[in-house]
Image 1 (cartoon, rainbow, N blue to C red):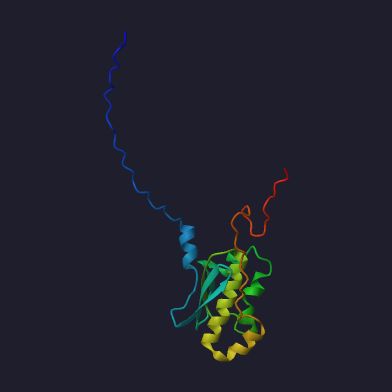
Image 2: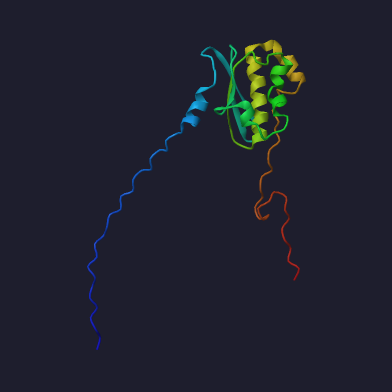
Length: 170
């Protein structure tokens, strides 16, 4: 009455995963990175911070371009209104606009906090270049690190920092 089930002869196939190949950059992407004129000379470096953003700033002694994360500064901060006056503020106070090449590497937080971190780093680097710049930058408020941070989340509050616990009505 009971029938015998035949076992299927199955073979196990080995799957070999190949490592993904790196995408080839287009000529436009490669050409954009080499169009900057950054002089090969001494530089002064400093770090600026705001919220979680960190900016590593290098100010070169000779004139050149202003580059942020491999892009011209105007392209990088294009979404912020009046960004050109903000990122040139430390240089404008000291009448140094266009006299130095600047490279910045920024990471973390949002675009506005990255701009503030970059301004803080630029002011610090300018003071390292010449200590006589300190009173002018201090008066403008560019040397103070803005310590306001996002408020931390509390346990049991439903995912928000200041949300109240739900109380049962019945």
